[in-house]
Image (tube, rainbow, N blue to C red):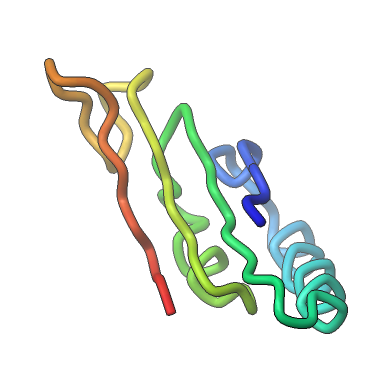
Length: 87
């Protein structure tokens, strides 16, 4: 199941990052055989990369095409996808 988290592309406080960890720990404990994928878009993960990679999910990706200063660059062929982790 893909869970879109566009707010991971924004500046987050340490308390907000900790809340992501708690929320995804809860979701993962109830997911059973369902695989979880976290996706963000519009901008790169920047300071939230460590948080995203540490989430207890099977995959994490970031899709960006809007901001030229993001950690993922746009290309003439369309948005680029950055896979943070896939298990």
